[in-house]
Image (tube, rainbow over all chains, first blue to last red; front, side, top):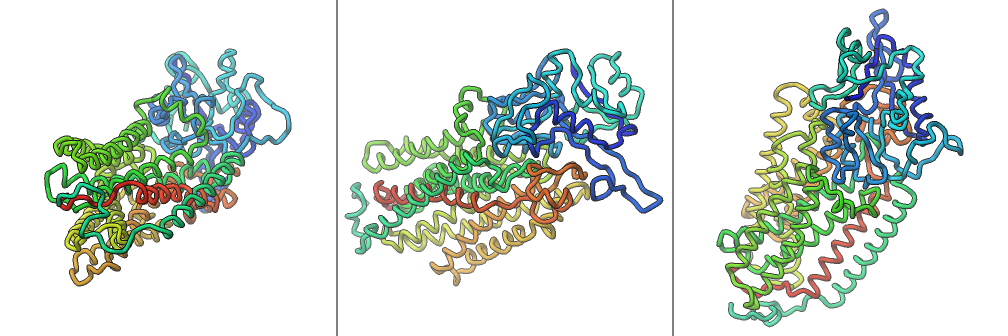
Length: 206
Length: 408
């Protein structure tokens, strides 16, 4: 089994709902975004490239790519980041991480790993989201867990559930009958930085 | 020379006495700087690393730059002193013990810089409990540790050899092992960077040999500075011919280092692909001051080394300082350059932990240097360097490092 995502860039409207639902579900500290919506267009967010009327703009949601050949896992000196062999999810153990940030240097996907540069601070003074989300710690690296706590309850990741455009799909890439496998088979797909050889588990339908 | 006693009685030793008040004051100052650095480090740990200039998109900074730099400085001294012995050539007369002691101090410093960079230094023990032997960082920790122990053994064996307790053959074997280890230390440190396919600037096979050549440049330069300074302070006496020989080696190493740089730039730039960005960033982009600084400093060092009329003590020290500064410039280029080119530079939500200059958006953050250290980082770095100076001076004061023999 290898869980992965298919994200339909034709449907994505750049509303950031998946980013925000990720922040809420995982009780992310201030300044931390595990899933970011990038504008594929002009210099600034939400601006198109080109001159009117020949303009183009689309969005790509970028979070941990849960690679089958992850650069981060190889370099972690203590094995705090590792691949779960049953699901293919790239995991991060906060209690083990020594905060050397080798994984952040190794990961080619800019900005998907984040470090808690201070004692985590929150917008509101009580925890929100999943009750079984591990507590955030100062000075350790964290990233998208694929909502591991939800997978354990046979639930899909939070970003999938709340997308208003139904642009995000999640499932088993090894199962040819799964919705993601079917979409990847039937649609034209793109992956981020395939030349780096990391074999990401996130496919973008274009 | 026959005397095996400590060199104070050597007929060649100059009349003036080394040490005394000046050295004691220097030791106290170095100790105070170390303590101040420790206090700042605790401030960094308790208040959070948010006080540094590092952020998610530029997650390493001054500390790792200094780590790279000091690993280079350390092995240079050891290589300079062990090569002649390993190959049975005439050495640099008496300076090898000082050179090895300098190496030991630099190795301690390099380890110190990794420790201050860690978010969770109290979890260091995990490195030995849960070692992932596939990680280049783990290799580095093992090799650096082995190297530190070997350097100490090598120094001890040299001293015992002078006292007639360790055979020359045994010492030679130790020097060969130390030499291999020194080369390994550089290669492994280079691999921390060069094995990462994710960063355009780092991913080059030339990195490891290039690290060795850079180490030879700044290691030789450091030994030269220490030797000229200690001669001036009447700690030891070294013939000018030996100093000049070392200076010529410095010149040769500088040229090898520049040659490697040229090879790497050509290979990056020629295909016209993403590597062009690296070349542009260095030659005309945000890292240009460090790039051209390195070139000019290297050229100066080489000129002093190869023009006989210029080989005066003042200029020899200036050329050595230039060589060390040039290699430091290179370390900055390597570290910041790795982060300066974002693989995915599309604009998105920016927050206070995303990148150093996050307020100016994605394009603004990469306009100048993506990373610049904060005063706290400079303070902690100074404290670590203070620890090194403290060790070096205490060693000079209490360890029998003066030359006891003339041949090697």
